[in-house]
Length: 439
Image 1 (cartoon, rainbow, N blue to C red):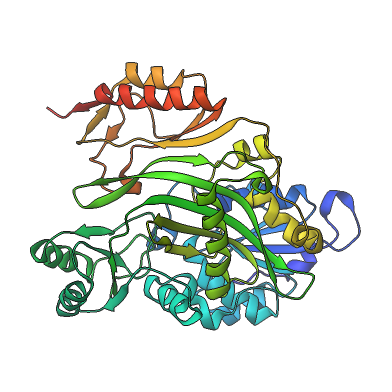
Image 2 (image 1 turned 135 degrees about the vertical axis):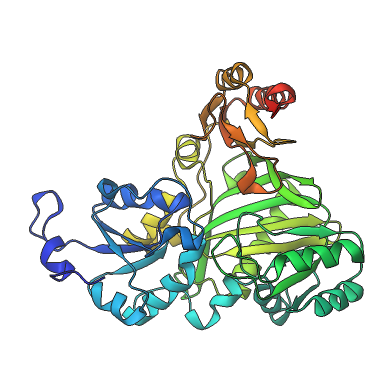
């Protein structure tokens, strides 16, 4: 959709009455944590333009509609890259707001001649098989992975890798469609369900990543990459998380995520965390992340870290304000710093924490039903619970949790580490009677 007048006619010189040109940043499909970029960019004196898809539901976008008041301008992607670029001629930066927006954002930045990752290698930052192939070419260890487009190819790949294997849509998010298979029979059923189905990002699954089942501790590393003083990309770590993942009937859902303590990464002496951080730098280099935010998920196995996936965008479901309160920064603020002062970001020391813990706890319903209001209120009243998902309401319907999107919701916690741990244990105890069955 084109505007009747160029954006420069309506946006330049309008920031707080200033006559100076307003620097513009476009955020492609600003959903999930990407919603936070509008207010954060505006606070930094930048014009934040939200580029929304023509049909958000077709791309798997969930949640409330975009709030125009949080953005300098909201435009609609016409579905043609040249037309979209012509609508945004004076944009200085392009950022992805959601996983679905990564390919469009990288192509748009390239089309406009703006900084960004090479769109010719977007697959290495979106497709599960392409990113593992990029690791292999760079000599970085990763899980054994095969690409399959037929059930026969899935079976052959599983036979080569050895059971158990994990099947994943080649491009998806939120653990949707991820299935661990312990037998050929289960594999055949899972592959049949995946091929031709519509994934979390609205794309029909035509290729499956068949991967060895990784065993070990789960980690996520959030970064923002800026041009370094030596001309090479400088990957600045904004947060490290250690996590517990729940396996239920062959599927995966989040359990808990803990911000690695201390938040001052320079003070981390845990050899596991140091190995995870070093490996993440190698992954980002191998997959071509040269600019912007990224989220790297991995498993620390007995033989070393192994990549689960790398995503060239902000981490999803990120407790932005809690991380900022504890460390003074977040992946969102570091992304804004990339635009306003990239040299300072590239040379910045890691942020220091204040001793408080930040954690997230995801609820998991063992069966369909509805939420018991009394137990839910007790969970709300726990002292370190700072925020809960909007859908967590008394008598709200829930479905059996089989992946992250089917979780009833999450809770963000912050406080003394022992108190946060105590409250998480209380949440798990209260969950025993939180879900009432349908009669």
